[in-house]
Image 1 (cartoon, rainbow over the protein chains, first blue to last red):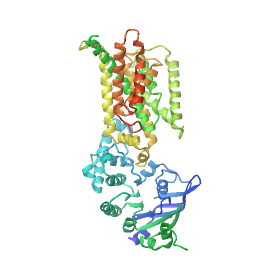
Image 2 (cartoon, chains in turn purple, red):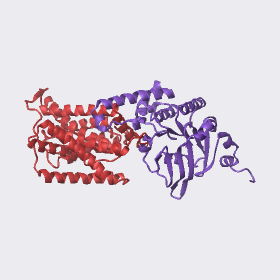
Image 3 (cartoon, each protein chain N blue to C red):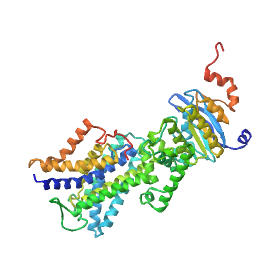
Length: 263
Length: 295
């Protein structure tokens, strides 16, 4: 896997990516490449700028400086829906499901970037719009099946337990058929068995050809599934390497645990 | 008071209430998507009625005139969003609401300039003698009002539940942030909400014009009543329809049962109900928490 990963061109690349909030530099001159076909984890202490980095990549926030390349396109400064349509989907640290919709409807909305029917054809229920709605429903169901939520398809999304809402967000993001999937703390709040299931899903997503970039605090999960790990600290890139290299790096240990006495 | 009088007031009330409901749905559509209370909503009804009456006077067949008027006012709604609301960009919601008040004044002024200050008439959609229902008179136009409103409400509900674009609009109403990250262009959704509000208002204005009269200032009262209906319904779509019908019936019953000479106070009824609602049940009578997400 590692040999393939190094040979592949980067799917996502940032150069000098910086975001300043007032006097706070949340993300500072980050150069980062994510290679296609890998699971790449970003770790770092709280406040290291991980979620801000995700917000820059997905277009929620414009960068203060620097550039972002995704595939062949420059995406810094583009709007979220435009970036989504280029094939970048994400989930959220704080769940952002559409609580008053059904589970299935949530996933159908996730496919919106793949739909082409306009308002008028939808209003008039033109055959093309109907066929598209039908197809979206079928695809959405298959993604619910993939994460194991198909039996809950018609339930209100807000009624799902927390762990299943995380899976719903995953299905919704996958329904966009992204080439790059950003997962913001997908294991937060999951129980042991649910974490094992997530690790299994992540491996299956990678083998289906989707590149995964995830922010995660759960080191067990990161070390078991990630091909590559980047460590952020105070908005700066501290280290990048394989999971084994990260665990062995003294700077990383200091960033997480603090400097030893007398050092 | 004879029972057939009560039935008659209820028929009057359901009729005007259906119009309030259509206008209230316009308020809900715009508010759910953009957070804006669009005070030009009543003027959409006025423009619909005036344009339809004007085209009919130019010898256009009524169905064509009505359809063109609805589409024209939907376009006016879209242009209001594209031309004025969107360029205001990140201005506060209060600023945007004041812009809609300005638009309302503008529309009234343009209507006086274009069509003069006098009421114009739109003929009833079909001629025919009134029907008798429990001793009360039910005009063919009343059936048009209730039937059109029912078709619009059902159609809208199907649009929001069954189509991808409808689901996208509901998604924006529930969570604009997440919806944008699903590839939904939230700006286009805002334009669509204003166009929808324009179309709904125009339909209301056109169907009520034969029983009331169409003139430049007819939107002021209709807009305020529609707003009250939307508040009664907790700014949700289902609640807005119910709110409109309840408001219309209560208003007409109060007017009918009031001692003679006090009938002119019927407009006050709506606002007394509004104040009572805001004091005692601010979420509307369906108990929805006021806020976005009411489609």
